[in-house]
Amino acid sequence: MSAQPADESIQEDAQYIEIDDAVSDSAFGEGTSVLSASITSSIQAYRVENGRRYHAFKDGSYFFPNDEKENDRLDMQHALFLKSCKNQLYLAPIRDNVQHVLDLGTGTGIWALDFADTHPSAEVIGTDLSPIQPSWVPPNLKFIIDDCEDEWLFKQKFDFIHARMMCGSLQDWPRFIEQSYENLEPGGWLELQDINMPFLSDDGSLTPNTALWKWSNHLLEAGKKLGRPVNAAEQYKKWMEAAGFVDIHEEVHKWPQNPWAKHPRQKEIGLWTMTDMLEGLHGLSMGPFTRASIMNPEEVEVFLADVRRDIKNPKIRSYWSM
Image 1 (cartoon, one colour):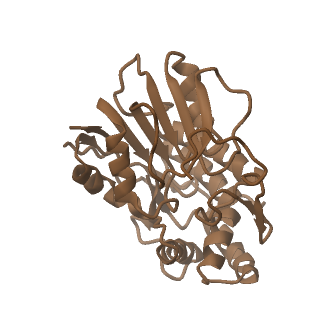
Image 2 (cartoon, helix red, strand yellow; image 1 turned 90 degrees about the vertical axis):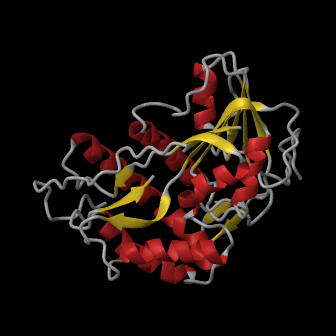
């Protein structure tokens, strides 16, 4: 979703997905606002919990891991976003000579790196709770350890603010969007790219007795209990309007959960989505499910075996709404 400060709504790729009847019935595969913070030992004193590593700065405020396995998945997920957006890093109609760009929740920094490389005249800042970004970066890019829910103290305003996959990250979304508005230059743009929970299916194949349906709703419950909703995306437009944004554009894409779709592009996105989910399922589940007291670690491990089977089952024609 892109918006400009001071409405139009676009639905794209959100039509009914045609099912590929040639797909086999068998499952797929087996197998402090700190504007000048330095990387200190305390920030790198990561917490290890149930076999996964988590951020140290503002410990506990983000319930997904930051270890190498998760970071590799995030880089792979970057490719999935590019495929979904037809190889575009962003959808907002920013001007060619954009000067100041902010990437919030930058993660591994891969989006910010790509943007800085393709826009050498722009000064790009990426912020995150975890210092997991590379040391060698383009001269027009810098990474900062910061919590975007604190008061923003940037010295300049921005022409473009970008945030992606922030579901489950924030407690106060309206304030986040208000601060984005306050820190944009006139004519600047805010772009939010996110998935929305729960999983959906248009043909009723995702039923309440499937492990995937249960997983999706457990994650909704965990986000609610922990005060960091994973279904905030459905309210972005409303919050943008309340903050004062105008010229709001909304695009809705469907990511098939596996390659069950007939159209080649949707089938490819389904393959990438399935791989992304299989790689990330443990990290996306263990923290929220145990911290919200939905399951203990042993129960999570047993449950995820059933979820993985559902993810690969072409008879369950579910999708993410993005």
